[in-house]
Image (cartoon, rainbow, N blue to C red; front, side):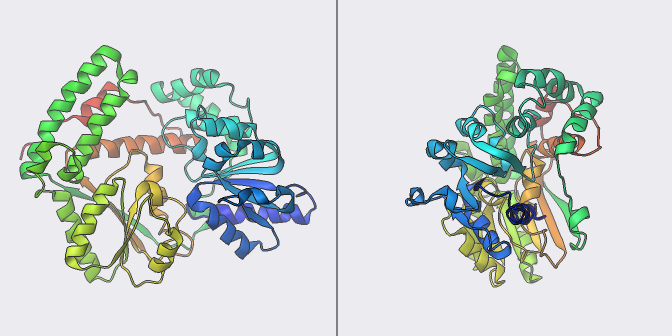
Length: 439
């Protein structure tokens, strides 16, 4: 979230070295996109610490004992597991530790077996979707604190998520809070300029509206049939496929790989609204980040920017020179940065931007908050304006409602907020497939 997790961690390791306790290397596991950021930050803030980036073809040439810190990736942990499991580290630190939220993955299971005297998880989003993710983190940190997975589900997860049990939530919060150091912007970044969030509501019209309704009715029947046969719990694949199609229509019908979408290609109300907003922001001299979860949507936006001759940069999961693009944007000459939500939502410092646009909503509000904090973070000197583009009466409004519930879940465990939350219900499904209001 841009509140100094990296610097605090490096400072702690520096103190441990000065006290004579850092006698073995510490391992930091990070997403590939953040590995060199750790190296750069260590060089800047703790130059006395010797850092090995265990990455690339020549990675096996160095001995861990020659370094204070070894930085590697989640992917290499699985590929080179014997190298990591044969060494006893001083600290095992997981950056963006939500990467082990699924306790069943091979990477998570391997990380559980790596020897270390101390363990630490770093994350701005330790809870993304459900409480089982919190159990996975604590199973890594302190096995047994929350029981095994079945015990945790029976005593905490199910009562809290399905029944809104505030007493169980209070008990869970009481158990984990002694082991959580949580910092908010109000605590450590009080000098940050204001952040203003706005929701821009857009109405679907014409063929785009007709297409949405046609797909909604078709998908609703398919989902209801699946739920009738298998129940909600076993119908997620059908449900998510249906919701994906509806979300794509809201963004731009051309995202659909369906013949019906061809007739509606000229009526993307949201894309038109975005470009009107971009035009006005350019006139005001603003610099903006535009996030979308669909890389194909970024391409359509890119086409519009090219037609207007607006200079821009783009970052997706295929981008190789991430840091070069960040540096270029930070120089202040290019006003627009198109960013894939998944690829660029973490690990980037883009304080030159004073505007953030979320083109489409994501299920998890913490992911969007992380993306917004590429701009609204320590180092920002200008007020930040955040725009969320939402199509009126559609599945996107239902997603916003779910975001609010997930915020309650996150805050209720990591703070003193104890409001209830329920899991996905038939009422949620009803909201997803509500017909558009009459014109």
